[in-house]
Image (tube, rainbow, N blue to C red; front, side, top):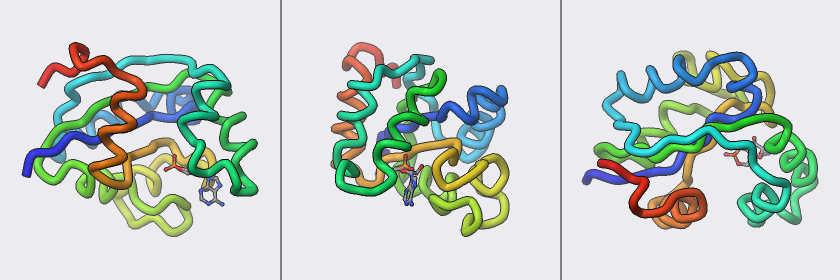
Length: 139
Ligand code: CMP
């Protein structure tokens, strides 16, 4: 089915001017970028976004990293978009990511791993609504 998923190009990637290279991977794979904006997240916004990880030892570092520079938040649309996007990203830790995946090609570390993608259709809807108004999605 045609789905929508939420994506973030993280500060390590925007810093290295990789926005276009990452978008090219998505578009080549048939995912359409139906919303996109470059923002600098506030600490409050990042903490709330990653609230599910609040009890994890890496939470504070993760929030620090996500507010260390601009990010590009996106909505991607396409066939089976949630899983398709996760396949393109590769494993969370670039050391475990398969050849040809975004994290294998670009990620610096498990924290500075270049991209975020929703892990389910349900979370995709929640995450999209956290960053975009309905009228900003142009499918
Ligand atoms: P993301 O998909 O954005 O969701 C949570 C993020 O936490 C993950 O990508 C990683 O960038 C980051 N992270 C940092 N350290 C760890 C860790 N040890 N295990 C899992 N995720 C981690």
